[in-house]
Amino acid sequence: PRKIIIDTDPGQDDAVAILLALASPEIDLLGITAVAGNVPLPLTEKNARIVCELAGRPDVRVFAGCDRPLSRPLVTAEHVHGKTGLDGPQMADPTMPLQDQHAVDFIIQTLREEPSGTVTLVPVGPLTNIATAFQRAPDIIARVREIVLMGGAYFAVGNITPAAEFNIYVDPEAAKIVFAAGVPLVVMPLDVTHKALTTRARIDAFRAMGTRVGDMVAAWTDFFERFDMAKYGSEGAPLHDPCTVAYLIDPSLFSGRLINVEIETGSELTLGMTVADWWGVTDRPKNALFIGDIDAEGFYALLAERLARL
Ligand code: BDR
Ligand code: CA
Image (cartoon, rainbow, N blue to C red; front, side):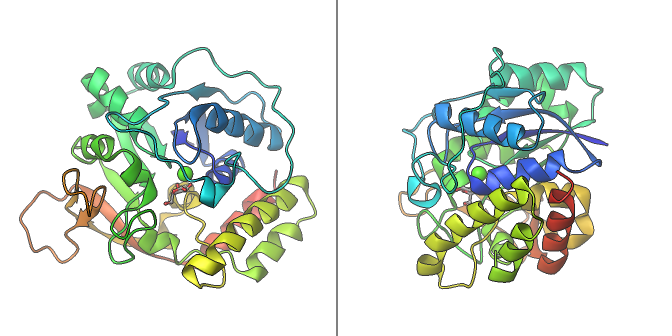
């Protein structure tokens, strides 16, 4: 199985990404690192533990990381995810422990201890933890197998500003460090996730599992949908973060191009924009496999089949 660390700010879609990883034998989840993003850190680390307990996996190690972006005040997204970050059904507080170690130290230690080229990082929130680890321990960069992240937008443009996607916008300086690191990078932008919509039939399929996990995922995606129906006018909401884990399980569901992607950190209007050279009009180095398309039916079939195992 593929060894991964999920770096996350749950978030209903983050929660589904974690569940998909825990349900999949192709994935060996070494740990979950929480970061401030959708909601402040005390809530994201708590939500990560709630999700592990829901999956019946209180043994998974959850670490709290950075509580604010590298050099900016934190921007949150309660307007999307609700006050708790995981609004929808009422959930009891978790009883499994939070690890004492800081998430950044866990990332550094894991990359140094595991054989080089075996650990994949899966960031589905702002990139603060990953960038901090790279800055503090540059020796680990060459040891990362791959980074598969959710973030950015190009043809689909932004969801937090007209130009920027939330994860990149919250900490553009961190994103710049990660995109320039030279690690093989796979990027799931809004262009893709907005093709992975939670239609009524797909939500019903989760509920039809007749399991606690199925009910929760249906309720979470319902919560999401209520919000996005008004905003995007589409039938369902984009289920962003699980696209990363699905890519690791079955990359044939996705297609994209290896291109140059740069992060805007200067302009006020386009701060956090992922400037993607899709047509190859520059000779800047190709640093990211920028995913452009998804087999949405195949993706939801995989999700339903896997989540039913929990
Ligand atoms: C991203 O922002 C968060 O709100 C979601 O969890 C996802 O990671 C989408 O822009
Ligand atoms: Ca997220």
